[in-house]
Picture 1 (spheres, rainbow, N blue to C red):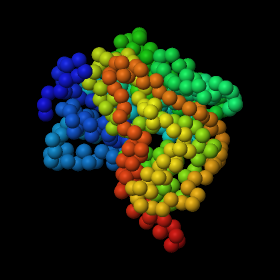
Picture 2: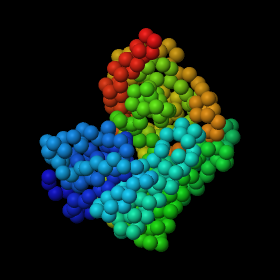
Picture 3: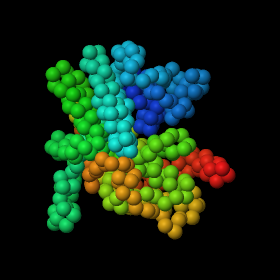
Picture 4: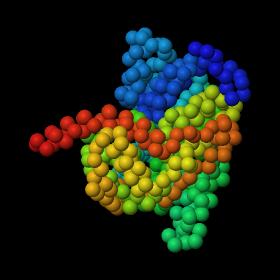
Length: 387
C-alpha cells in the first residue's frame, strides 16, 4: 500500500487501534475504511460481530489484503479482565460502546446510565495508566434542550437560527427535569466527557471527543422482528414501516427538526482525527451536516418517495400517522425541537466538510434496507397472516 501523508504532509505511520464497539453501525464502517484504505491494524471488541463478518472471515482464511490486520474479541467491557491488556498493546483506543436509542432512555434509564458512564470509566482509566490516546464517541444529545426550545411557539425570535446553532466550546448544556428520564443518556454522556476532559487537564490524557449529529447509512440499527427487538432510531423505524407497507409514525406531529449526515462523510471526519493527532488532541468536534436539515415529517415524506423509487412499491393513501410521544416512547419523554451543529472548529482544524445530500444518503440507505430486509419482512408477514 502506497505511503499516505497527514494534513501537514507527514508520512502516516501504521498503528494498532483498539476499537470498542467495532461490531456496531459506526464501528463496521470504520473497520472497512481502515482495512480497505490504510495499513493500520484493528483489535475489535464487541459482543456481536455480524456487521463485520465480511471483514473477519476472509482475513481468517488469508484471502484478502488485510489478513493479519484485524482480529475480533468477543467480550463485554463491563466485566472482562482482558480489556486492560488489549488497550496496553494498542497505540490508539476508540470507544464507540453505548446504549444510544431514544426508546431505551425511558424504559432502561439505569442500563443507559451504566452503559454510557460507568462502563466507560475503565476504558478511560486504562488509557491514562498506559499513556494511550483516546477517541471517545459522545453525542449531540449533550447539548440537551436548545435555548429556542424554551421560547413560546408564537415568540418572534422562535425561528432565529442563532438559538439553535450548537458550538462545542460555548453552547450551554441544558437538560429537562429529573423526572424526564429521557435525559439519562445525555447526562451520562456529558459526565464522561467532563471526566475525560479533566483527565486531560490533570493527568495528560491525549483525547478527542466526537459529537455525532444523526449519522445515517447501511447497517444502521436493526429491523424489529428480523435482526433485533425493540424500537430503533428514526431512520430504522421509518424503514421498518416502509418495508411492512405501514404508515410512518410521526411522534408529536414530526415537528422536531434535525440534521442528517451520510456515514461515509462522517467516517472521513473520524479518519482525519485518527491520522492527525496534533490537530485533534484536546478537541471536541461536532460531526454533522447542517445543509441536510429537515423536520421529522419532511424526512418521512422524503423517505416515502425515495423508497417508492428504489422498491417500486405503491405509496400508501395515508403514508403517515401522528402519535404522541407518551404513546410511542412512554412516560417521561422530552426533547429539543431543533439542533444545528456549528462546523467551524472541525473545518478549521481538519479541513473537513460533508458532501452527500439528504436525498442521496437516503437513496443509498433505503436501497440497502430493501435488498437486505424486504424478503425476510415479507416472510414474517406471511407467517403471521397464516397463523
